[in-house]
Length: 73
Image 1 (cartoon, rainbow, N blue to C red):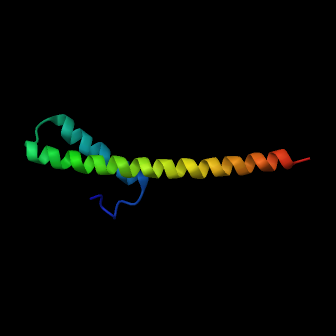
Image 2: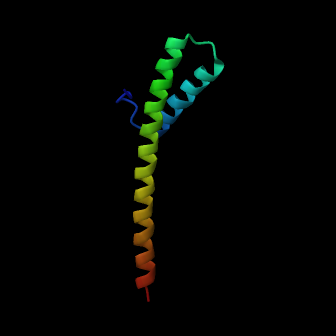
Image 3: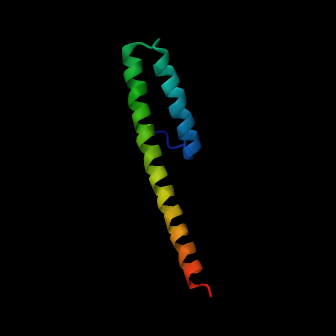
């Protein structure tokens, strides 16, 4: 499970990057590599959800700004 203390997207991305480096090194026992891979996938899903939420917020702001611009004299 993803650590609840890692709330910011930046923290989760940094953790994912660190896990990736460890896995790419290829020096881990298979059990540990599988465990890190699983944690990495959880982090990746969490980051993707956050990015989708942020993208939605940006879209709302953009649409609101466009409405204001269209209503301006």
